[in-house]
Amino acid sequence: MRKDLELDNIFIPSKIPSKKLMIVLHGRGDSSEGFEGLPSFLDIEDMNYILFDAPFEYYGGYSWYNLPPNQLPGIQYSSELLTKCLDSLFAEEFDAVQSYLFGFSQGSLLTFEFGARYHKALAGYIAISGYIYDVEKLLGEMNPDVKNSKWLCTHGTYDEVLPFEESKDQIEQLIEGGFEVEFHAIEKDHSIHKDEITVVKQLCDKNL
Image (cartoon, rainbow, N blue to C red; front, side, top):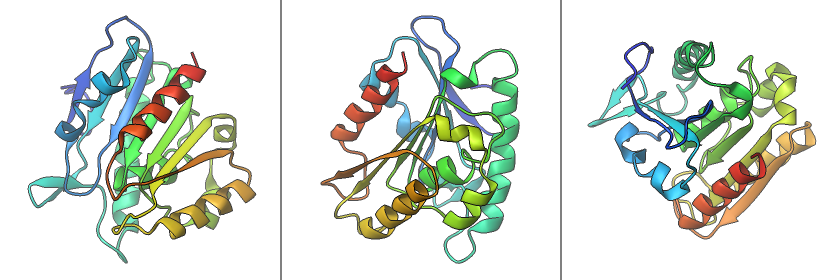
């Protein structure tokens, strides 16, 4: 655990020393522990990982923001904490342009809502099974430099928690607004599928 950061976390160092970092944001009710197996699945020897716990307790796990329609205060608060954490990590130890933001469900929303506004552009952004709080506002407030980054979004075609078509429509709006987003429809529910791990690894490999 990195005790110098605003959020509780699990830090997993790379096998080969590097300045690459993958920042992992879990979904509602989960925690950093739910993603401890991700490094072994991706098998990227020079990638460091930091798995964050969201700031709000939620039924034995954690949450980044409240349920609709009260998401915004939590999104803003969590974004402020993530900004402080990433500023600290990217001050000297890690390199933003070699790093990735990875989010599932609520973490996926923050990948867009926080990641696209963050003042440093990362190498890539990975959003799995999520949605966007406000597409038009995001397009107006985003850091224009993130348009040059790799964006990967995946969603389950039979997701009963966050409907597939709604998320797909939002991604299409982002693409029309200038984002280049690689979108994958996956035959799955609200979970992470092995096919997604494959496309995430491919995205990282392209940027080597």
